[in-house]
Image 1 (cartoon, rainbow, N blue to C red):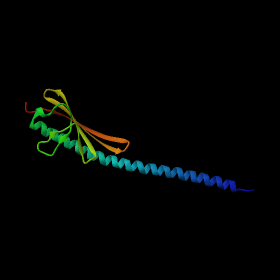
Image 2: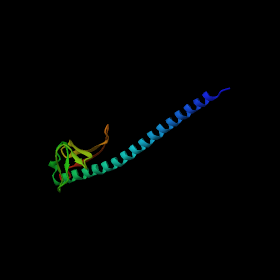
Image 3: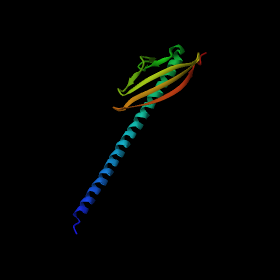
Length: 137
């Protein structure tokens, strides 16, 4: 009785199982790397969002009238900071958009959105919101 065909079938099955395991391992490593990068980038983006909220508070403290409704960028190069354009770019990676919307004549909602390219095909973003009042009234 000749068993050569049986050994060939075992070899093909072993190669298929090994290939499947290798692809699964490679996918897991790529996903882990992407998740680590996303967590690192999101932490940095939250820092820039908090910085933006502090800058808008400083604007509010300087002049309530400077908190105009709409989408703005921030220029932190001087004190106090000021709105500049419709967004600002940070470290050539992150884009920050400050959205000011009126709740009442003495209350504004401030939303800071930070977005960045996680991969060429995937944009990630994070947003922080706060409510500011004209406390000098």
